[in-house]
Each structure stands twice: as structure tokens, then as C-alpha cells.
Amino acid sequence: MSIRPVKRIVQAQPVLEGAGVQLRRAFGFGVTDDFDPFLLLDDFRNEDPSAYEAGFPWHPHRGIETITYVLAGTVEHGDSLGNSGRLGAGDIQWMTAGRGILHQEMPKGDPDGRMHGFQLWANLPASRKMTAPRYQDVTATEIPVVTEDDGTKVRVICGSFWGETGPVDGIAADPRYLDVWVPPGLRRTLQVETDRQGFAYVFEGSGTFRDASEPRTVRDEDGNVVTRPLDQTGNRSLVLFDRGDEVTVQAGDEGIRFLLVSGKPIQEPVAWAGPIVMNTQDELRQAYSELRNGTFIQPG
Image 1 (cartoon, rainbow, N blue to C red):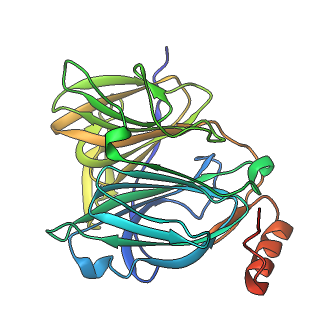
Image 2 (image 1 turned 180 degrees about the horizontal axis):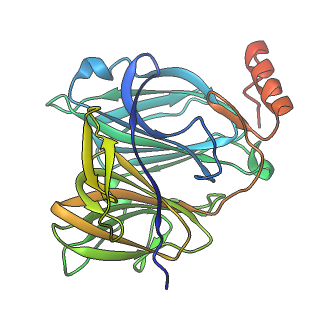
């Protein structure tokens, strides 16, 4: 067994999206090789309704899957095919945009005004870019939770882990999507198959993902320059792993909670503009031409 070394640690950066939603982007709209088959991860978290209420009005998608995971508040959604619904705390929506869909997502806070969720984009291979759109809406009660004797807790959203299999299935990149909590001071090792690209996104507490003693100078989530041990991670830290078949995490004094996501690389060319991701620039131009002339949504 080999522990995956940490390839890179970065802080999610402030971004304005939709009609004016203030969020943090962990990665996206850059070189895709390091995260293949994943394209983007956004953390939309705020306690000020004015920072998110404008939401994400009608917009297109083609060639990707969007995965929305809500932790607090709700997200109301609707699309050009007549589907609509609401995601509550703990719920997941895994949308395969395929050949094209128009939809909107409108976040609402809980009674205290809190809104928190994530959106992950996964790429589709060329053979499935133009597949029919598909939804998998999963409620919190459908997601299995594994709790170990030491208090480690894992919600298995997609893929198999520790004897449980998540409810989301039929995904091209065969991903594993886990929500992991490790109690204070505890060290845990989690399996991630060697043939998968993997990353962790820390959103509560802090910890380290390998032994290290050298300090590093970074900017924290508020933009302040701080000195931390080489691999110490905190709120809104993205940890990109190198190759190996295990990830080791040492939780800090407050414990650590993070998304652990992995998938098999697609290793195909990426032509990307906004919410549409294809394999070639010609395909991308065709998609936007169809969007302009009203033929983007295809029947059948």
C-alpha cells in the first residue's frame, strides 16, 4: 500500500457567478489535466441572503454533469424539460446535461439565513456528450452513512466505500464522492484506487494529509498571509493528491470534515466555454450556434 503524497494545496478564491452569487471556487476554468474527469468545484456558503438570493437564473449546459450537494438552506430548480423540485439540507442532485438542457437554480437560506452547498462539474466522454439529459435526485435519508468505532463518519454519495454503496449510479467516470468527518486528534487512512484522480476539499476544522515539518506561507480564506506547517489545511482548502492507493489524514484539535472525490480520468481533449464543455472547438461553436438559433434543446 502506498500513501498518496500531496501534490498541491490551494485556497478557494472568491468568485461572482449567476446573477450575483458570492461564492468560493476551489478549481475550474483552467488546465483540466490535474482534476480529470472533474472540471470545477464551487463552494456557495453565506449567512447574508443578499449574497446568494439572486441565484443562477436560466442558463444552458451540454457535455457535462453537474452535482449539487446542499448542507444548509434549500435550492429550488427547474428546467426546459418541465422538471422542477427543491433540494434540502443533505440532499444531492446529480444532473447529466448530455446533449443539452436549460435550467435554473435558486438558493434560499434556512430560518437563520444560512446557505451552504457545493457544485461539482464532471466531464462526459465524447461517446456520451450527446446522451439524453438525466436527473438523479437523492434525499438525505437515502445516502448511507458509515460510522466507525473511533467516531469517523463517512456519507457515501456515489461509489462504494467501507461496505456501503452510494445511491447515485451509471456515471461515466465511475466516481466516488464522500463526505468525511474525522474527530479531533485522530489519524485515519482512506483508500483511493491508484487509477483514480483524487482530491479533498476541507470545509470544517483543520488537519494535515501527510507528515510534514517545513513551514509554508499562504493566504488564508480572508486573504491574510499566514505561516502553516507544510500540509496543514483549514477551511476552504483544496488538497490535490498525487498517485498512490491511500490517503492519510491527521485531524486537528477541532476535527476535520472534507469532501473526498475521485474518478477515472477520461483523457480526452477539452473545448470549454462557460457552461458548455465539448471535445473540439468546432463542436463548441456548433453548440453556441444552436443556442442562438433555438435548436439547442433536442427532442427525443
